[in-house]
Length: 60
Image 1 (cartoon, rainbow, N blue to C red):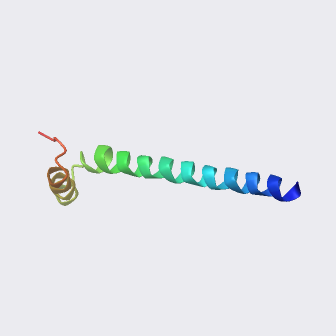
Image 2 (cartoon, rainbow, N blue to C red; image 1 turned 180 degrees about the vertical axis):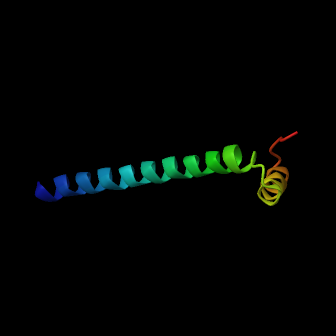
């Protein structure tokens, strides 16, 4: 019985890690598209612009 409870707690910990990683990945993606893409620094903006075109993301 103790082993079953331990396995459930382990599965919950793994699920929470997956959720945390997904949230951080979405936040990083939003940062890259939303902040870096509209940067006034031309080198940063041009790099983001090229990546958006390479991924077929509309930017014009």
